[in-house]
Length: 169
Image 1: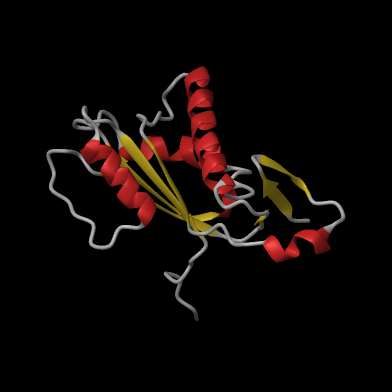
Image 2 (image 1 turned 180 degrees about the vertical axis):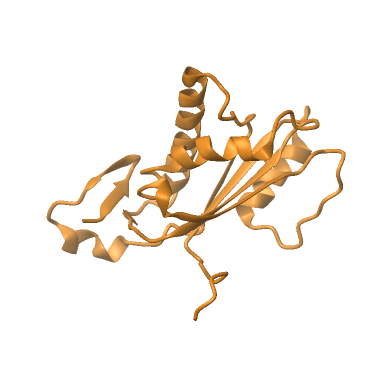
């Protein structure tokens, strides 16, 4: 059974499939960003739960912008996480990944065991970097970094069902 998503609520679809089939769209790629410091695996339980809620709320807001029904299938996905800290990052980039993946459960995909590929990268301010053709959401994240009166940390997240990186035998 597929799950549906509408207005921040997730649950099994019961009856009335004919009424919503015309409004079904793919949510992928699903991109959003947060102007927050991501929490790591070492954070306290309460802090991690607050962080997961923050990430889930950001996904919900982004999906609500689509104003349509969303199906969460059992298809594999890839996740990209870019972190733009305000200074040299304390800790390891890999420690921020698992709490983000857990927060996306039942919001961007049914379960994080569907994630086949994770790309994570930090872009520290003392290192030069450039994006050739950023998406609208990534551009928004970059603008949040450059246009703020005071530099703020940004976490950009992209979930995609494009598995073209796979090779076929």
